[in-house]
Length: 67
Image (tube, rainbow, N blue to C red; front, top):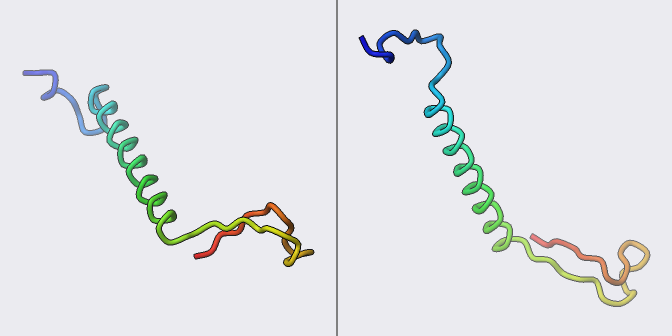
């Protein structure tokens, strides 16, 4: 019998399985972050307030996001 045959379902996964699963989770997280970032860059624009026309709510130098 091999080592794999003796393992029960309640045993902890082998280190290689855990490492592979962790790497997959990291890759999925990075890809999701890139998709969210790209979507935000396409649909949300930032503008810098210049001048005092919007005071007191917004002051010169602040940024606003417009979607």
